[in-house]
Image (cartoon, rainbow, N blue to C red):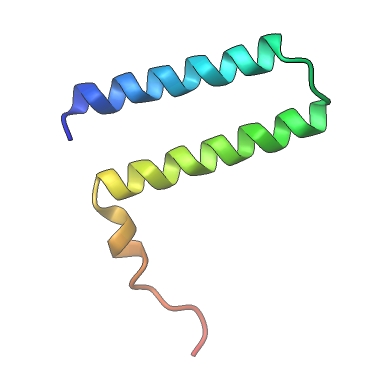
Length: 63
């Protein structure tokens, strides 16, 4: 995936999240959960795009 596409996607997701936070009336706790879910989803997406998700999935915790 070209870097320009990744940057544009991040800008669009950030703009949409800002619009939701700014103009949609919600409780602060729900906004915090929404922001956390979006950030986690974007980080996982970026890890998958750059090929690090498969690398991290090889680690085992415990036995």
